Image: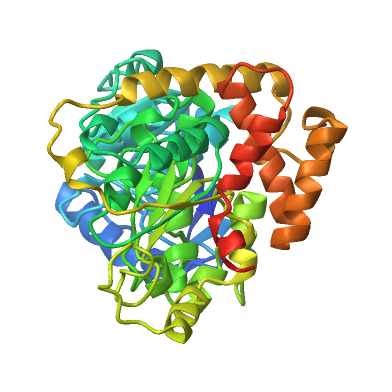
Length: 510
């Protein structure tokens, strides 16, 4: 007596199909799960046994062997409970095999036979559709998440008996449907507005440039100047998520277990702000099984690092490779995974330990050596990867007493959207390039050519400040974005000059 049931799992964020093979043989009653089953998968034997008995089904008094194929890939998690239970019932002849080959099953079983939500459902649903599986049976709380995948029939169920009755044909289940276009077009609630920030015209301009070209931004200034207020208003001026971006973002959050409770689709750009005590595993990803970290959870969104100089050095240095590649690659003894991590970094820091260096008063109690050591906590290679360095000065009282709002987020968002439209036409859907900040060397040669006069001005700036080659190319990218905001087809001297002004830490180092 042998049964085969389809299910799926994820390795990192990459899904793969699993064939659950259940065999009932003569001999002493045992229940063995093989196929590199770890942790919660092995514990699932007890959950499955209790769920079957408490639902009114007999557990076969036979030698039960369950194989999870492919057997050379590690299996973790609780999502194998339902397919194992179905396989047992089919092998014992309790459940019919009607349409079983066209179905896949996913879900955790409670001891009473109820189905509980699991992680990674969206990724598994997409893989099932690619494999030609017609129907995916999942817990009711995961149904809307899986239904985002078009071309796949998704059935949300609440308990094991309902699944068996569906397979017997004695109960019809209603397919779960989701209107993805309606979700994306629902409109975002814009609670935080740029007009709330008093003064700081230069910082607001830098924020707009960062949003328009997907440029990383560092805000440096004393406490209370508005650095955090500015950072938290960046998502409000970014363009809305496209459907491919929303699916990728939702996939990462699904694998990380962030969509529990009936979540469907991430329709807003993520904003992640981990505390400065975060570990490198918390930022990059890790654990057993490997799960995405804060960088991946900020995919297609914003990663905000407040008090940048207070983060541990190894945590900050972990940012360098993802900022270049847009992905995190983790290698462990049990294998390696790749998590997407194309985020917009915005960081804030004080200029010195007390926070008041260079604020125009005598409040600073730090000597030059202390200031240099504090700023040196952020390495040069990391600063090179941050396109915009902006000083945020204290806000004068005359700005605070003006209650009328300044430029709104809506106006900035329209300018950003127009600049992004120009970039979309320029790059024409080139793989991995959607904004100026993501341009490759070949794109720079094509789209960031400058006149001899502008090149001479840039050369003088490089000679004076000692910009690295990476920093110079980032200046060109920022200048290209400023030209796009001005509606200019070429990078002019004023665009390059403004871009150079946003390298304040490079100038301070001279």
